[in-house]
Length: 471
Ligand code: PFF
Image 1 (spheres, rainbow, N blue to C red):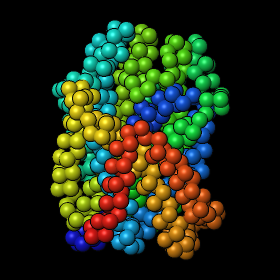
Image 2: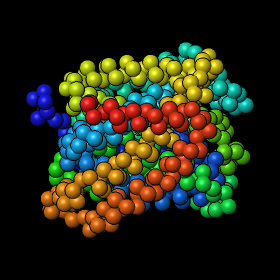
Image 3: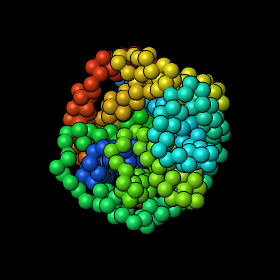
Image 4: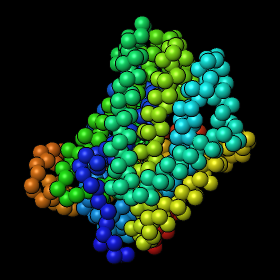
């Protein structure tokens, strides 16, 4: 029971939980960001470093988030607060990150939605104009906003229906669909002549291109992709049944997320190489290079392209649902708001942020704050500062401030399931992970070229640390 006397919501089934958590993890991060980061950071060497971070650091962090969430039965802020009010700020940083990511994520979700329709309405007919038309589209003051609103409406609908009926049902239908579509498109790409060069680019490591930046990009991407560092998996873990095996579920979600990213790479790079496109195309990769590839595939092109963008919408939707849920769960747990009130009020703020983010790529491109437009402001603050600090705080909290026996009991369900690697996991969370994240996060934060923004982000954290005790 919570303060309002309502029973806390729970996942309906194990499969449902896994689909929802994987739905959160698999998102724009996998299909939009992972391929372009891979392309820009030299391909396979980046992938190897990324995989190392995912399985050595992030899997342990996910186990910690699930454990802290289920043990406290509370979403991000409540979970920290139940130990000590001094820690409230760590949860608040998470909720704030949720807000900030929701300030640009639905904008890209809206683009994907638009491209489902555009696949059939002549986009592919003029391949040479695809790049310009993307630039014109995202800079248009009205069109992307309409698509963004549509995307957010779906999001709001799902989250307002609640954990089991909304989020879980969406995950159970959409996630399998996403994997099938990606497999289909990868199969088509891999059977093109010249595709093997793309496979080589993905899997044959070339360490000469690795720099300090490669590590930063890989760690940031690993956290973002697995939805870690902002209490999302704490929140999802808090709805989890006491009989579930936490470590095993975390491993399944991590493997699914990684497979989706690699599959997205396989869906894109082989075809890209076969048709002679540049891999390092930046954020426009998915919206420019991918339609250009499909434009070369004749009658099948528009259908495959539409399928691809449906996959992107699906991935984005199940993730933005989880981002909204982090904020909503906080308002329900800590402010005793009803679900509907929490959903409507927080999304109203998100709509305003998304409008600014979308316009910052066009008519408002001249309006900057601390050197960047709204879209980059939300993205850089979360990607480079808040998620890494959030992950660091979570590791320190779990390793040093939660009793080891409590963790052991929670992870083994009171001794009824075995977790042979408990000691290894605990050692990693307590000693290794905080140091690794700290080194990489500090280097990453120092490398932000907009110094004003960097100081602003750190100041926000400091202020939150001072005032959050009262929340
Ligand atoms: N993991 C999502 C993606 O890869 O697109 C993004 C995300 C969702 C980040 C939820 C953080 C989060 F809490």
